[in-house]
Length: 448
Image (cartoon, rainbow, N blue to C red; front, side, top):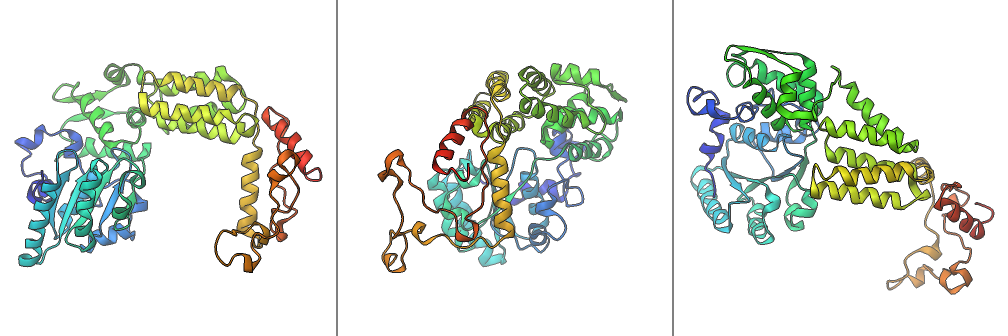
């Protein structure tokens, strides 16, 4: 059901009004929601000074938009800030519990707001990816004619989950996962804020602990603040010191020792990738275990395995990327603790596979040429000839169909005239690339 503006924006307008009653029962993450850009941490690429969205919010001229990003990156917070900073009528819908009738009720009220009060209506839809096609279609005409300004929030790729027609009428704002440093800053704000945070307690905490909290939160400010609140609840009322042993007690074996600058995190990831590249499956498993125990984000690990499979194994064993991508999907589908198994399978496969970076070097060389040279036009015999008038232009006339020849190959020029001597792909002698090299040598003996 729709929630009226006053219910949604009250916290943004008067966050300390009920500190002595209901507000003290709210989770720390809710109490610490930023109320303005001075308190908002991160997302400078989207709402930094001078950026489009920042200017539109400050000018009270919000376009329809979808906020897309991982959990805990500030999507709902931005919507709440807009509720507090805009002069528009503000409504909130939750895609899980709202239906078409709720949308139509908001539209009716929006027409009244515009007619009698000259106010625009902004509707915030959390988890908009859960709206089905019919619900999204109902929104479309009202977003198009301006009766509703839509702000949607989603953790899912909107290009997959939101109707194309609706996407064409909104601006996509992608929010990035918060860095460990940004999460530490948020935790420090909560520790010192006497109005909404833990500032009234005498809490001492080493930055090493804050780094560990940040890394376990995996870029999610909500998780980081929840962990901090749970640790603070373990202290006596007068305060005390948060320790690594308390963190271990709270989250078990997920805690490892981190240095104050977070170098251990990057060192472990670096050693993990280099161990796979260096064909040492034992070392790769060791660093995988370190990351799993420390609470590293599964998607982060899986992405590194997939990148290594493409960059360092390549065509020496093309199945490495297939196995790595299967592990990426399995991690998203099953989660921990079972996800450790497909991850280990992919890691050991990539580490044990023959290595080649020929495809990686080849595409970078081709990109360098395209960016820096006049590469010429596509040869006439390769151009599309499947439309009326193409034959008059000579398109496709001299193309030779390879399957009409023995071995399904016959030589002809494929590169533009200006680039006919370019040579990007240089397969090596490892694994499947040796077979590719032999075949290409038979086809192009002067090049391979």
